[in-house]
Length: 279
View 1 (cartoon, one colour):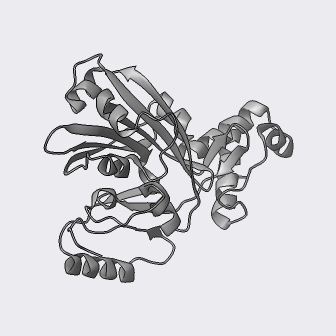
View 2: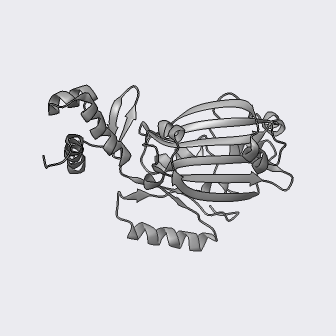
View 3: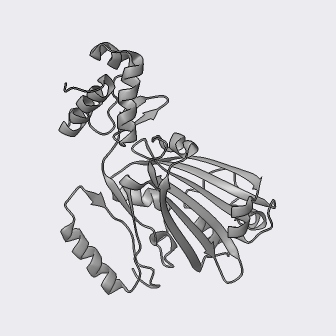
């Protein structure tokens, strides 16, 4: 190994082994103890070497599985797909549709609770501060890798009227549930910012604090009220957001052109236009 701090030399060696394909996405690396024994260094040095690669998004840690090699694939999500008026009926939500279209296996951990609206949520939903809202939280995984963290808030009366207050996951997604129960969303406002991960976000997503995230906020409404607000956080280096707007012919031409220009295996896209009546 080249000169430099021992932990950095070990990190350099592991990085090269990952890039050469010795360690593939999903592979479990030796534990800190095993690595320390192999390299004849202290556990602290081994841990510091691993943290270098966690900070580079080459590795993540899972409590039950140890240190795992991250996929370097970029997932493209056409975020207008979930709100297109003629979106085909399906028993799965938009994340599962996108993941499976990209050849990945989705999974999620879901929780729901009633809580008082904080200042931001009250503003977004147009409800009084400290009024009760339903918060539905989903941590999403691709091939067992923590991928994104989504929290959606709903006014209590609307959630109770539509069954969105259920303590269980809604497989088809809450956007479809709201529409089926008479509250279709007809307008949306999206904002996307890139910012460093907080300590809490880093722990949920298995990244280092300060890792650049995409923070995507969507407010949905119809002509009568705000229906929900969803905050979706994902690792910026592994996700790309796209919007498709316009008629079918133009949208299909764009997709065909991009499909010819993108090298196979580098990224995946999935989605449809927002034009009513498209197939």
